[in-house]
Amino acid sequence: MRAVVFDQFGGPEVLHLGEVPEPDAGPGQIRVRVEAVGLNGFDGKVRSGAMEAQFPTRLPAVPGLEVAGVVDQVGADVAGVATGDRVTGWTSRGAAELAILKRWARVPDALDATQAAALPVVGEAARRALRILALLPGETLLVHGASGGVGGLATQLAVAAGVRVIGTASPANQERVASYGAAPTTYGEGLVDRVRALTPVVDAVLDAAGSGVLPDSIELRGGTDRVLTLTDPAAHGLGVEFNERSEPSAAELAELVGMVVRGEVSVPVAKVLPLAEAARGQALVDAGHSSGKVVLVP
Ligand SMILES: NC(=O)c1ccc[n+]([C@@H]2O[C@H](COP(=O)([O-])OP(=O)(O)OC[C@H]3O[C@@H](n4cnc5c(N)ncnc54)[C@H](OP(=O)(O)O)[C@@H]3O)[C@@H](O)[C@H]2O)c1
Image (cartoon, rainbow, N blue to C red; front, top):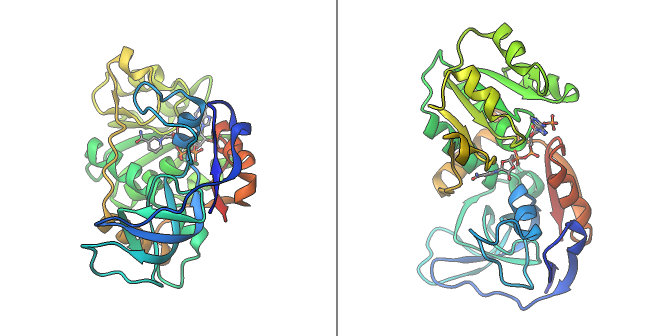
C-alpha cells in the first residue's frame, strides 16, 4: 500500500511517498481504510530525530498518530464495531492507505472525515491537561497557544466548565481566542504586564505553545505549582511539570465527537492536503502557526 515514509531523520523534506506492506488487525484491533490523517507536532519531533532518546524509531518509518476512516478488518476479541463503520482513533503509522487502531470512536455521518481525524490527539491532550490542573469554576487559567489545536480545545472546555481563561495567540488569531470565550492577549515581550492588566490572580497555567513562556508563567502564577507544559523541555530545569503521558480513552473521544457535532466545541482544520504533500503539511505544523489542524487525505 502507499504510505508516507521517512528513511532518514531530518526536516520535513525527508518525507516521501513509498510502498509498505499492508498491516493486519491483531487481537483487540481494527484496520481502517484511511480517509484522513491528522498531523501533529509529535510527528515532526520524531522525524527530526529529536525524540530518539525517549522514543527510538526504526527506519524506514511511517508517521501519523490519528486517523479517520472506514473499518475494513476486525480483529479477534473486538465487539461493537463492524466492517463499513466510520471511526476515528489513535494509531501509529497512520499516514497510509490502511491503519491499525487499538482505540477508536464511531463517527456519525454529520462529521466529515477530515474533521474527525483532527480530534484524537488534541482531545486527549487538552483533557489530560485540564485533569492535571484541576480547575474549579471561577478560577483563572492562562493558556499559552489558545489559538492552536490543544490550547484552543483546552480553552473551550475550561470556559464550558466555568473557568475564566486568558489565552495567548498571535495578533491574527485574537478574534478566534475571543470566540472561544477567553480574554485574548498576544504573546511575546510585555506578556506579564498584559496579563496583569486582565487579572490580579492566575490560578493555573497551561503551556500548549512551547516557546519559552515558562519564566513569565512562573512569575504570573507566583511559583511553579499548577504550571503545566505539554511541550517545553525547559520545564525540567525550572521545576515545572512537563507531561507527555498520553491516556487515550475511547469513551472521551466519543464524547468529544458528540460535542463537535453539536457545535459545542470546534477544532478548526486549516488545511487538507493529499498524502503526497505530507512534507508541505508537516512543515506547516512544525512552524507552529498553522492556525488549525493540518490533515492529509490518501
Ligand atoms: N505533551 C503531550 O502529550 C502533547 C500532546 C499534544 C501536543 N503536544 C505539543 O503541544 C504543542 C501544541 O500542539 P498543537 O497541536 O496545539 O499545535 P498548534 O495547533 O500548532 O498550536 C501552536 C500554538 O502555539 C502558538 N505559538 C506559536 N508561537 C508562539 C510563541 N512564540 N509564543 C506563544 N505561543 C506561540 C500558536 O499561536 P499562533 O498560531 O496564533 O501564532 C498556536 O496557538 C506542540 O508542541 C505539540 O507537539 C504535546
